[in-house]
Amino acid sequence: MKNIKKILSWILIIAIVVLIPIFSYARNLPKFTFGSRLLYSGTYGTDVEELQAMLNKAGFDTGTVDGIFGKMTLNGVLDFQRYKNFVPDGIVGPKTYAALETVSWADPIVYSVKPGDNLYFIAKRHGTNVQNIMDANGLNDGDSLYVGQKILIPHPPVEVPQQLNNATNYQELKNNIQVLISQYPGKYGVYFIDLNTGQTFEINGYDSFIAASTYKVPLNFYLYTLITDGKIDPNMKVQYTQADYEGGAGSIQADPVGSYYTIRELSRRSIEESDNIASNMIMRVVGRDNYIKFMESLGANVIPYNSNVTSPRDMSMYMENLLNYVKAHPDTAGELMYYLKNTIYNDRIS
Image (cartoon, rainbow, N blue to C red; front, side, top):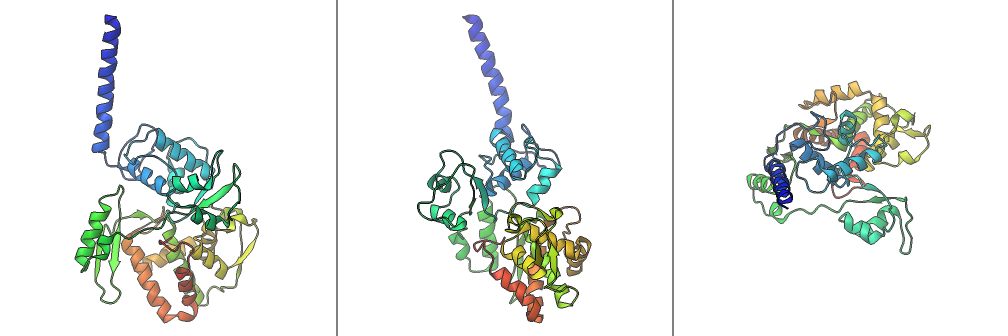
């Protein structure tokens, strides 16, 4: 009996020794730049915290955002890798990092119906409502789901906190935004321009961030400068090849490889649907090197030479330049502005 008590006391001591470092990690995470190392079960740090926040926002549940790569985080990574048709090894390496760069929180989640599912529980689990799911999938009352069915789950609308509406000047607005974002994990960037006065403020505005689908704005901006200059015919047809394929947002993925689309149609889908394949086809036509030079010519500070990155300041600069370009060339670039005003994701920038 004494031996059993002694063994139990040692187990308790070992458990305390193991748990104390874990709690310590959660309070004071070591800092790592996202993408700078392999992430897998047992790793911890600010990059794991960023991974968890990113996957959760994209609809891949990692549980609590605590910066510790545990079982729930592993399941989220595995689900994401299966969604991308990767070999699901649970290790976040170069290929998974690259795929994460294309994830946009604005894009609806593609959900596979599981045994016992119904629309009510699916909606509750993802923070939306039944009607939103029905509208996104063209479902009617009484339609039944079947196991394995793929449905789109739109994200819940973003609500603007009241304190942001109560600001009386830009410094107060900036302070309110800083208070708001301090309540959430991850790193946030803001760059604000008053187009009437030119007044600006920023929060991490010049820092590098994963661009996700926002790169499609300068890409299509560049495309329309070529259309305006007569270098590209918007009615020119481009063939969809296997190399253009990319899952995620957009409807072209449902069409057969070999289909043809006009440049104008590709731009519309790239902007209105955030279509990844359409964007890849546009990039193929204009040339990535030329696209990079275009961003440099506008004065961008964060250039996506090797990875899909940008900064809040650069994105604001692209939009300001685009607005001025549309005013100067409404007959051509006005078409692009129409697409930007009619995106299917109406409660956020996609």
